[in-house]
Image 1 (cartoon, rainbow, N blue to C red):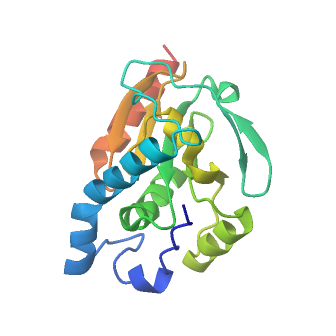
Image 2: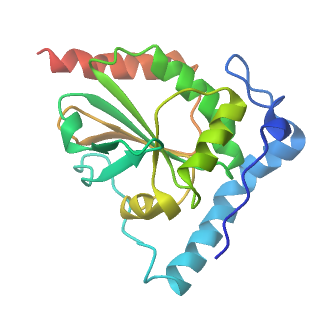
Amino acid sequence: MGMLPMVSPDSLRNKASPNKVGISAGSDFLIREWPVIFKMKRIVLCSVLSIFVSCSSPVQVGQEAPAFALDDLQGKPITLSELRGKVVLLHFWATWCPPCLVELPQLFKFSKGLDQNHFKLLAISVDDTSPEKIRKFLGSWGYDVPVYHDPGGKLAGRYGTYRYPETYILDHQGVVQKKIIGAADWNDSTWAQFLLKMASDLTK
């Protein structure tokens, strides 16, 4: 199956910014219909390419997150186990996913306001392309944040992810405390309150 094209920053420049998200009627349709489009894509992948794509049951709240090791876009490895003791935002996204690109500015801005001693954002690109191309894509948007690479979404498949973007919030023991299917509004203070409550539990 061929690689889906990256969405041009210019095509969404006026529709997603770190301060305000504005969405045209066309983008609104894409975001509304994307779950159906992606679910159909995943059904085809699972039925025709089951040898290559994991179709695991979705990881649920209360379950321990599956362990993994990934490289960032510079080739530096990280494992989930080494993040024990921190609250982890595990975020699957792709350059070809319009809702992902609407959400990313908010998420990156939100994560920079977190205490890195207690929190870690793992933004994981599932693009089946080279790390260099993803770096250039992020650079064209003006982003300078750590991003990790899951080529073809193999790890996402192990988590049972079927709709991008998808975010898992893990506690300090690696247990899923929140699962967000689709784009979240990270400007909503509810998320900061939720994470601060989790961080306060670390000191008890």
